[in-house]
Amino acid sequence: MSKTVIISGAAGGLGRAVVESFLKADYQVVALTQLGLPDQVKFLEERFKDNGKLEIVPMDVTREEEVGRNMEVWEKKYGHVDAVVSLVGGFMMGDLEATDEASIDKMVFLNFKTAFHLAKQGYSVMKRNKGGRIVLVSARGAFDINAAHGSVAYSISKGMVKHLAEIINESGRKHNVRCSTVVPNIIDTPLNRKAMPDADFDKWVKAEQIGEVIRFACDQENDFLAEPVYKVYGEY
Image 1 (cartoon, rainbow, N blue to C red):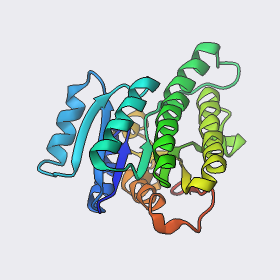
Image 2 (cartoon, helix red, strand yellow):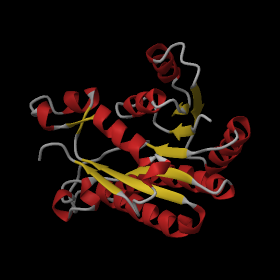
Image 3 (tube, rainbow, N blue to C red):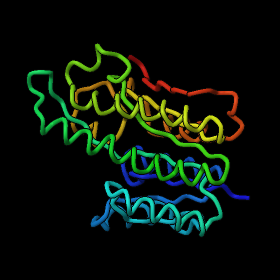
C-alpha cells in the first residue's frame, strides 16, 4: 500500500526537493502551496507533470481550523496519513538590540505557528491510526548559541520548533508517532544564492541532500531511532 505524506511549503527551494524525494520513493504526496499564489501550483505541475501521485493543494497553514479540516479530508481520501513535513518559514537578521516585538511576532507566526498547526493536526490523525512520522525544520541557532547572536528572533522561533518536536515525541511514544527535527545550516537555493552572491556555494548543503534526509526520517524502519535530530550543516 502506498504511503501518504503531507508537505507544506512544497514550492519553495527546499520543498520541491522534498517533494521529488518522496515521489521517487512512491509516496502519495499532498503538496501544500501558498494560498493566492497560482504560480506555485503551475511550477509544481510543470516540474512533476503527469505524476499521478501528486496532489497540489493551495491553503493557508496559518489557520488551524483549515489545517484540521483538510487533514481529515486527506485521511478519508487516502485511508491514512503516514507522514507530515512542515517546511513553511521565514528568516530575519538582527542581534538582541535590533530585535523588537514585531520581529519576534513575525518569526513566531511564520516559523512556529505554521509548524504547530500542521504537526498538531497530523498528530491527532496519526494517533487514531496508531502511528506516523512528523518532520519539523529547526535551525542551527536553536542548538548553538554562537549561531544565534545575529538572528535572535529567528533563532528563538526555531527553538520553539525544537521544543515542539520534543513534546510530540513524549506524547506520541505510546502511539508510534515520532517527530524528527532537521537542522540545516545555509541551504543552497536560488534565493540564498541571490541574497549572498559572494559566498562559497560549494560549502552549502544541497536541498536534495536534505530532501533525502527528510524522507529517511519518515521510514517506519527507523523505529530504533528515539527523538531523532539530523544536523545537516554541509561544510562549516
